[in-house]
Image (cartoon, rainbow, N blue to C red; front, side, top):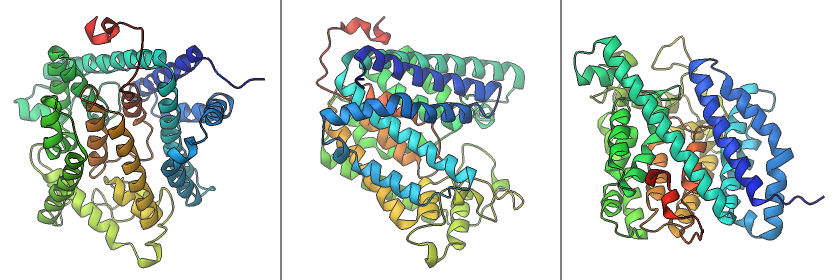
Length: 403
């Protein structure tokens, strides 16, 4: 029996995955907190039945596919080696990252070969984003009517906007990239609503990332091509800015010092939290770490000494704790391979996907993205605009923003 899936079936499969993930977010937020776990389990069960045969077929057509995705294979292999197969939480962490990166390969390869898939995927992603922006607008309006804020600052402190997601940070990380798309498409109404709802998430990490990427952002706004030197400068500038932030906030602050989303208090306790992580490390675990998922249970949390299960809020430190310096090196190699691929596949018409990924890896410095599956929305967004020489018979008016 042939394993080749038709282009139309590939498209429907992509849409089913992303739409079911969106539904699981809604159910997780408003009905049952463990819906996303069920979605992840169903996705894993679908791999041998649907997704794996597709990748096998693709690999037969392209023998270099495993070389192209070698950084992902190496990173996931090392994660598997450091996963405690008898610990449910450790397995959950590994499978979450496996789902995200396996999906990344699947989505990229299908979109490379199927113009119909790209257009359909793009359209439904924009619809999901617009739905979230509208839902976030209703949440914001309702909060003003019910909470009676003293002003805009108190409203931002309340963080009323989550959209279909279970946390304001997740909303901002997943929806802010679409504002770049709205700028490129000159959809200024959607841009205004999107930025307004993003502001009232009270989350600042991605906005700080945009400031750090000011050179790329200026070129994006001026429709100027981005070159390698721009990217290298921006990455070095990110390191410089966050290093300065960390050095000048290297104090012992606890979560109770938090007063407002406008000041740096939430960054202070993060730095203290990172100090606690490093304090309890030893040279024994320097190379290989403590095992996947171990960082989530480090003692003496700065939140509450009775709650040792607070996340690190720094994915690079989290990986260092879990899989050591080798795991961090493999992860950085993976990041640079994705940046290289995006640089080769973008021009002034779709350069916002490169900005999107750089914002994502910058956000990882002070937030939690690994071991979660919601970055799927970002990878779908990137994949749907990836191929710059895409040929299609669909007219431009089929762009959802142009309707």
